[in-house]
Amino acid sequence: MTNSLYHAEHEEFRSSVRGFLDREVVPYFAEWERAGKVPHDFYAKVGELGVFGLRVPAGYGGGGLANSFLYQSVWTEECGRAGVALGGVGAHANLVIPYILANGTDEQKSRWLPDMVAGRCMGAIAMTEPGTGSDLAGMCTGAVRDGEDWVLNGQKTFITGGINADLVIVAARTSTEQDRRKGLSLLVVESHFGGFSRGRNLEKMGQKATDTAELFFDNVRVPGDNLLGEEGNAFAYLAQNLVGERLGIALGAQVSAETALRLTLDYVRERKVFGQPVAQFQNTKFELASCRIEIAAGRALIDRYMVAHEAGELTAPEASMAKVYCTELQARVIDRCLQLHGGYGFMSEYRISKMYTDSRISRIYGGTNEVQRVIIAKSIGL
Image (cartoon, rainbow, N blue to C red; front, top):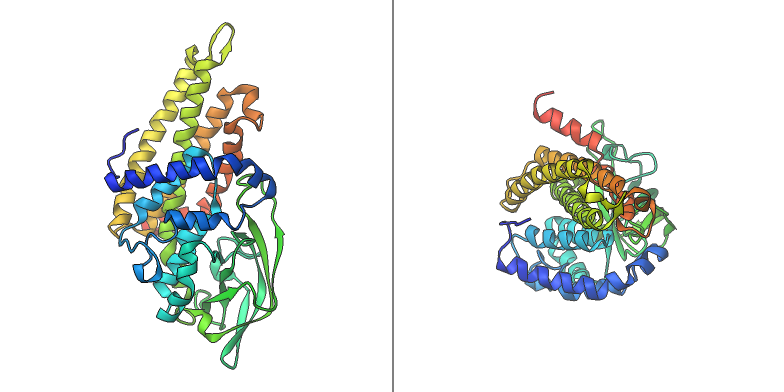
C-alpha cells in the first residue's frame, strides 16, 4: 500500500531502520524472546541510529526535530513488518524522554538526556499498580516530605522496560485531595537508590522479548530535585502524553494487520488442499477481501490522525477512536488469517501464531478499550 505521508527524508530513515533491524535484531530476536529481554548494551546501538534523540534538542545530543512523530512511526512500521516487538525502545523514546523534555528543569535535562539519547541510560514509567490498571487516579503508591527529600513507598506492576531501566518515572500520591486526580506527582527514581528493587521479569503470553517488571519502593529516599514538573500536577502530565501513546498503539496495530494479510496471501497461494491452492477457494477470497476492506479503512483513519498529530491538532477522543478501531481491526484480521493457515496457524514456528499472541495486549495497554469508549462517549455528550 502506498502512503503519501512520508517524504524523502523519512524514507531515507526507513532504509536505515530496515537495515538495522535486519542486521542487529532479527538474527537474535528468538534468543531474546527466550531470555525475556534484550541485552542492555543493545540500546546503545539504537542510540547510535538516532531513534532516541529525534525530538531532543541538539544541546542534549539529539536531532532537534520539532515534528518527529512520523520518524517514530517509521520505526513502529518497520518493527511491525520485521515481526520484532521492542517495547523497551518505545517506552523510552515515546514516553520517558518526552516527559523529561516537557516537564524537566534545565538541570534535569542536562543530567539525564545525553545518556538517555545515547542509550546508555534507559528509562521506564511506572503508573500501573496491582490494584489499579487504567484507573490512574486510584493509585496508592505514595511519598511524603522529609526535609528536602521525598520518602517513597509502594508497588508498581506491568512496567514495560522495568528490568533494564536505569531510571524510573514513578507516579505517586504526594497529598490527599478529595478530587482523586489531584495530589499526584512524578518522582524520578534512579536504580541505585536504596530501597528500590525489582521483582520478577513477568512471563507473558506475547511480546516476550519486552521485559515487563514488578517494581517495589521501600522507604526510597528521592532527592527533591528529582521531582519532575510541579508537585501535584502529575495527572495532567500523564494525560498530555496519552494522545501520542494511543496513536502509536493504533499505528502498531494497523501495521500488524497489514503484515498479517501479506503473510497470509503468500501462504494461501502456496498451500494446497484437495488438489488446489487454498487461495482458489471462494471462502478464502471472501475472507481476505473482507480483511483488505477493513485494512484500507483503518489506514485512511490512521493516516488522517497522524497528520493531525504532527500538526498538534489531534484530540484525546480522536486518539481513543484510533486505538479502539485499529486494535479491534488487528484482532479480527489476525484471527481470520490464522484460521486460513489451518493447523499450521496454531504452530509457534509460523509467524501468524506469534502475531496472534503478541497482538492481544493492544486492546489492554495504553488504557483499555473500555476506558477509551468512556472517553469517546463523554466527547459526544454522554
